[in-house]
Structures are given as structure tokens and as C-alpha cells.
Length: 420
Image 1 (tube, one colour):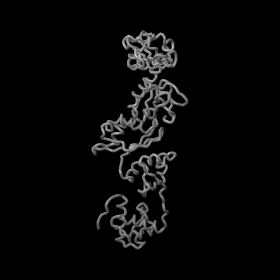
Image 2 (spheres, one colour):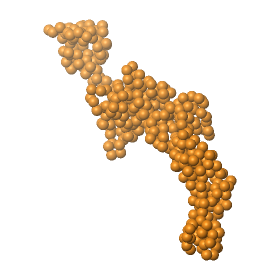
Image 3 (cartoon, one colour):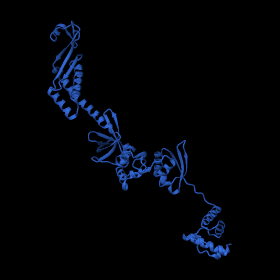
Image 4 (cartoon, one colour):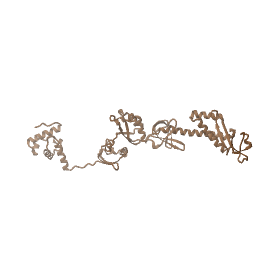
């Protein structure tokens, strides 16, 4: 048995990385525990294994008495003299026993102890190797599906990509390479379970940290992020160096950096905006190309009320309201969006607006503009084919009519009228 034990110790040390002392402690404890419950029930055993030779030795402890009541733990004074020169009542002696007496139970128990220790070591190794990688991106190979989970081989261990952490629409076949965020390590009854994610906002953040050097060195920082996996991600960025454009740094030359991340995410849209402490300015940036109007900020409830033009309403809200939801999560403010109200102008308002428009022509007085509007000339375009006689008939003098025509023609043609 010593040769078998020695072979096991050497194999575990070289191939599995389990120290010899650790394996010896596990085997001796298992043999001792099994023997005291089996052939040596009730005995106080001591088991030792020589780390160099693998030789197994065992001793049983007996109390010296003058009348034996329990042979498993007691020995008569006369018989004790065979094992110690001067035995005394009440003392204990160590009697070496033949390991063969431990029999088949010892061998089987040693085998079980080895397997149990290997399994425990594998669990501990997985935890120790991957616990510091939580939050980092790892690359693996898809192996199979189990109850909807995608099992990914990371090389030294297997990890799980649950359905909730997958990007909607993505589908991986066995053998494909996949990049994921190591989201967490969960301790289960079967040992540590590595949980991966591609749907977490942290996955996108880590991709930017790996792709954008300015984020790595701290020049550019990601201030906030909101993500709807498979649809759109919004991030706001800032910089500590005013000479650096944080948005441009993340986009890269000809969009190279952000395109690389978009490809990794399967075409998911990414909006990168400049971060501002002012919520109104931040809202304007986040809503582009829609233009927020008539904004009203409620600091107490962190709510912003605003309007957008009819043509911008669909853009501002987004498909299924996603754009508004992502903007709200990005800013940390509740958003109330409504359509901009367009009030119909009455006759008097339209007339006054036309007078103000004509009166804006250099050299045209408000009184002259009012006379022109009364004639039906409410814009420069409407002035075409109007003669001096028409103006004289409407109450202008001959000189005044000529001067007004010159000024209106010059304004329509985009040149300055000659001075009188």
C-alpha cells in the first residue's frame, strides 16, 4: 500500500498542485476516522504516513489498568509490560498495530479521501483563480446549452451565461468564441459557479475602458450609463483635460473605436454625449436631434417638464419609449414630454406680423408698412409687379412711392437701396 500512496502523493503534487503535506493530512484523517468506526471501533488511533516513502504506520492508545473492562481502550498491567519497560496503572501506552489489520476499509477510505480532497481543491482553485477577475472581460468557447443556460469553457473552468444575461437576438453555436463580463462567482452546493454576462451595462463600460486609452489613463471618465441590451446604450463622458474632446476620444478616428464596440455588441446603437452638471444642458445633449423647448425643472422631485415640436416627438420618445427611458436613467431625472402647443393666429395678429415684417426693411416706416399691408402687400414676394401708380393710388406721394419701390426692390434682391 505504501507504493500506491507514494504514487498518489507524487501525482497530486505534480499534476494537481496539491501539496504532499495537505494530501497526507487528508488521507490519515480519513483512515483514522474510518478505522475507529469499523474494525477498531472505540480505539484511540494515531495514523502516520512517511512523506518520502509513503509507508503507513498506525498506533492504538491504551490505558493501563489492573482489570480490563473495555479491550478497545484498556490493557492489563502485565500485558503492558510487553510494550513498555515499567508500566504504571493509569498511564497510557502507544501500541503499534499492523496497517493490514485496518484492511480493505483503510484502502477504500484512503481512495475516497483522495477523491474528496481533489474535488475540494478544484473548487478552491476555481474560486481563487477567478475571484479577482470579477468585473473583467473573459474569452471562452461555447460548449453546450443546459436548461437554457449557455455553458462556456474558459480554459481551466466552465462558466454559465444565463438567458437573463444574454443580448436579445444573439445566438451562439457550440465551438464559437465569445467575450463576456465575469459578473459574479456564486458559491453553490456543487462548488463555485462562475456567472457571465453580455447584457450588463458594466460589459459596455469595460469594453470602452479596454478600447479607449484616455479612459484607461483617467483623462476621460464615464460619468453615467444607461443600457437597453440589443437596442441602445447611452453614456455621458467628461474630461479632466480641457484640451481633450471626451466624445471624440471615445468615438475615435473615423469612428474606429466605437465601431469596434458596436460590432462586439452585435450592432447595438451607442450614443456618446458630453456630461454637464446642469440638467437642462444635459437634457439638450441627450435628446439630440430633438430640441427640448419650454423646459421647467422641479428640483425637489427631480423632474423636468418640457415640450418638443411635432416633428421631433417620435424621436424624443423613441421606439416603445426607450429613448426617453434611457435618457431618464442616464440623468437620474424623471422626464415629462409633451407636444409643443401651436396657437392659431387671428386676423389682427397676422396683420401686425406682416406690418412688422415689411417694416423691417431699411428705410420703410411703420406707417408706410401699414399702408402696404392694407393694399395686400404682406411680404416682399407679394410686392412683385406693383407700380408707383398703384402706390400713389393708395395714398403715397409720387416721390414717396418711388422711394418705397426702390427700397423694397433692393431688399428683395438682397442689396442696399440708394440714398436720396
